[in-house]
Image (tube, rainbow, N blue to C red):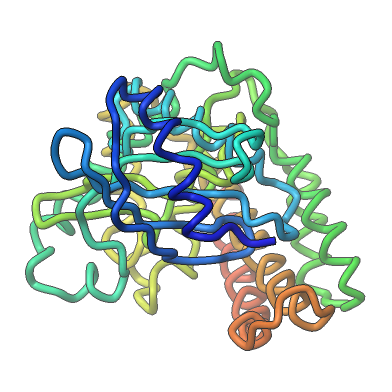
Length: 336
């Protein structure tokens, strides 16, 4: 059963009093989204002054089987914040016994997240110019986050993800040769992880809050895990997140060379281009399976959403993108 505003207004105040050490009065409680994996609310309160918060609750619906859960999402976000990543401060974590399910409350940050606005509006020209530097510094902080308290986060290396995604693809009953071709190549060339790091897992345009001065916050940690830091660089360059600007792989804003150089400057570590491009191909493969997942969640009656049904048409786009990625990656490996 979905959580109501009345339940939130009843349960949260005493928890906030304990977390903040002062009484709080909620006077606005408005649902923003009710997606498959997160039920998100906008809250306004008075705690010795006005406060604006975001509450993320587990929606309880099926997911890709790659999300660690809202509690671990909150703990990873909190740890990354301590390491210097620009994220919203987590105020309290809900374990489920409170009656709202698993979730967490965090501060609301300012900024724009809509890619069409960020890519075209003149107000964000300066933010676009410094995007690679901002993104690289955020990733450097994420990947340097101590894992001491995050050892129970799932370890998702390339081989694990490839097998999981291909099993999902086969479960849909479609025989798509491009998926089989790319699966075989990814399986045969899967890199090993020498030193697992915290990985955001969905680091892309659309999951950033950006102001006119630059990056204000990294959002949506629901796919966070331990893994290969190059995964985040590859995912950021997947063609689906370029929004029609194929010639600018980094979110439709910049080149890979600019991103790699900024990451090397922020971390002091060389980017293995072939490894990053491997993850770009794997990310494209993943997005293709996600498109199938979205469509079949409708076709199998799990989520009555026309938007999900329509996204199935994008599977063909990902097939083309996979072939382009694979050709470029094979040429890169041959040149080396």
